[in-house]
Image 1: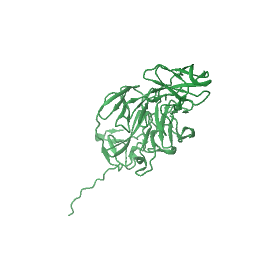
Image 2 (image 1 turned 45 degrees about the vertical axis):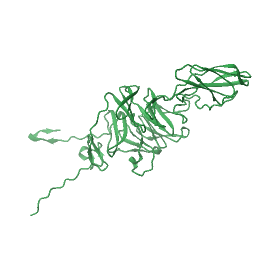
Image 3 (image 1 turned 135 degrees about the vertical axis):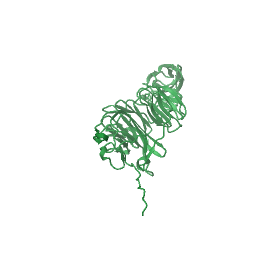
Image 4 (image 1 turned 90 degrees about the vertical axis):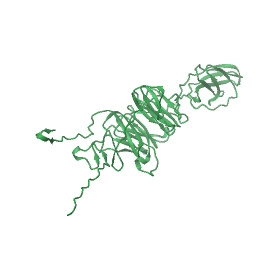
Length: 422
């Protein structure tokens, strides 16, 4: 007589992941309707998430993990904080509710929230991002200096800890034969001033002197300092978003994208350094050969190496949720190991679909047809690795009802004693 055998129970796997587009009564094989506090592996297995450890209390948001230096940044109760894994250290006061945007360039982290801006060095110290342009210098002709008769032009920049500002409108001074120019700089604590001057009837500005706050100097012949590169440059303005691309910082403020100069991220030339759009900008992220710029109505791609040769075209007929962009996604996450490395980004469109922005303006709507997060007023997306898993984490704020999300049909069921629940 054969012995009874234990029936085998097939292992449940869910390689498709979440699906909230299909009806609950007709979910595709390998998909989940709800997956709370569980992670789905690449093979479709379910792993229980580890518990969380509280590291801070209060109103915390706008986290950023620095690529170098071993610290993270966040906003807590109206202060920009540095977290070294153990201790939270306040760096400066900021607008408490405004979301902070960050960009890494040359080892520093630049931040802005639409109201204020700054920089954190690789060692985690607070530093300046740009200096206000000083006023035009006070100049008058001097009786000595050895210049030939004619007209010179004079301007100046502010200098703090090696950081140099833009230069204002030059002042013209007419000098007599053998004369010079007397220059008086403003009084400002902790600031020195670099004075630039042309030759008589010349056009090239060169640094002629460095003067301490409130000082006066007489300039004549013999100055051979470096040329002036920041004439009419201003301090970069605060914006809602900032990103780095091809040695420049790009800043979205309202409906305008501004860009800094390649010689210094602290200089912005307002007469030529911008792109204007028809609506407020909700997305600014970078790919290998361009920038994705989104509004609430559509997403554009600004392609090219330098602003002078960039072309702008729409690449997505949907808009982007405010704040949902993230930069520098590892290529192997998208194409697998051994893929050619290229810079990609990610964002959530206004249909609630998670998108990858590839080089060339190619947008892949990864979850379209299977999962939508719903339309939200704001969102934040982060990429992280832990326990061998590679994940995107999205936080959506103030989610509105969305017609793209499936609505489950009623499932009548009869219980004991004939009670029916619908």
